[in-house]
Length: 276
Image (cartoon, rainbow, N blue to C red; front, side, top):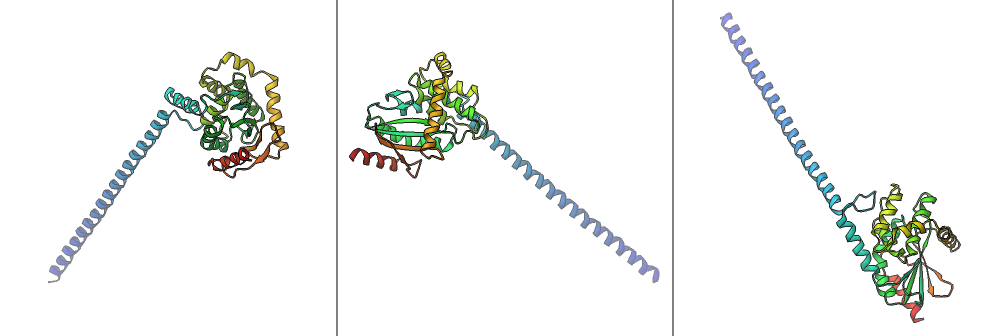
């Protein structure tokens, strides 16, 4: 009897061990299945991320973009930028740093830094409306003046502004300015190199590059940049863009529009002066 009980207990123990083993095996199988599913999900996410990265790269290539370099990489993107600039400036007289009829009754002085992103915002949003409505009609001329704010290196600041003024020697300074703002690179990335300035010049329609290169060495242009900075300081300006507005031939008054992306305040101030 005792032997039979012992055998039953032994069989029960073996059964329990087998059951425990099966339970352990199921747990391991479930854990392995879960791990496999997790790896599969991670792989899928990795594939999706890779597709997104590739899509971004394709978009950047298609648009000619490198956020740091500024200059579009593709000929199509460069051509599109030149077309946009020509649409704003086409048919409007230029002389030196002045855009518009030299005998316009009103003058707007625009103090800017070519690397200033806020100046870019103004140039690409409000300025086209102002140019179309007031400059093209001969009622307003705009004078661009240099003021160092966003550019970190004084020598680079002077070089880029002199490059624009040299284009002005061929009455194409505003084309150069507009292209610079349209193709402005990432701030503090060091994108303004000699190559960058040269590539901008190559995009300006009709600009004679040999003359432009020669004119960049003019001490007169360097002095003009220094004079602009002194004028900005005397006016009490601390940031760009900054403006003075008034009747041509008179002392211009500081003009604070309150916005750089909406043309309304500019329109109102110009209308008030014309009607006054």
